[in-house]
Length: 163
Image (cartoon, rainbow, N blue to C red; front, side, top):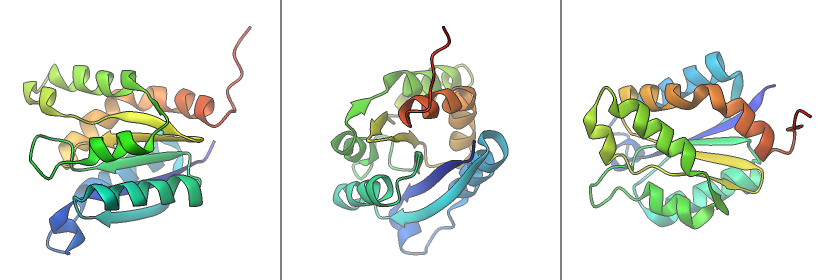
């Protein structure tokens, strides 16, 4: 299955061209190599809740991707608002994905408990928040990669329960 995927980076410096978005490259590699997905759209927006919301809505409703992976804006800084924006867009939360990421990464790095990312569904799209660092992206996405195909089958209506 070729999963249509979008990457959304929330970063003030990245949106101004002051910082290279290396985390998005990690996401791209993992999606293409591990998930068998195709990146349909990629964007960088500033850490502004309204801009994150607008981008998430466009990616899910207009581009109709199967999966949106966000990076950045998930820690405790005042401008880290990606989880709040995501909650305003999703129709159903999928807490187990975020819990699994935190639990797995905390075994190696206790500061993972400060990661506030959420995961949820809008329409037929799964949205997963990831940290802003390349290492954090890799560790968190790797922690749940084996379950994403099943989740995407469910979200997109292609899952057939085994009887």
